[in-house]
Image (cartoon, rainbow, N blue to C red; front, side, top):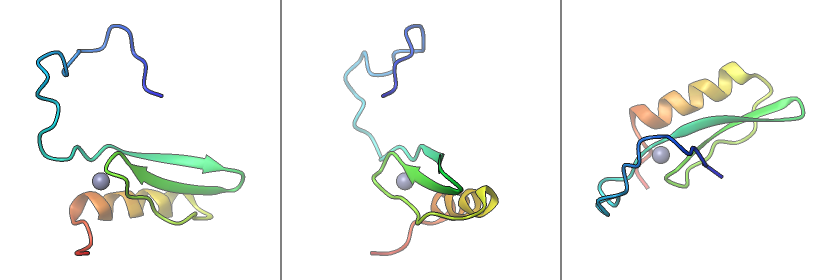
Length: 66
Ligand SMILES: [Zn+2]
């Protein structure tokens, strides 16, 4: 998945399990785009990448109370 040889190895100390890191990305599939996050969250497919970005921003701003 995420293989970056010379990126900062921030898990070298083994304290990688702090608060959930929200790393949102936009994935495009055909004419749809959807946002998904490292925390497991993902948004439904959108026809516009802009909308998917907004989903991502909303997620980062405030995750829905579940
Ligand atoms: Zn998240």
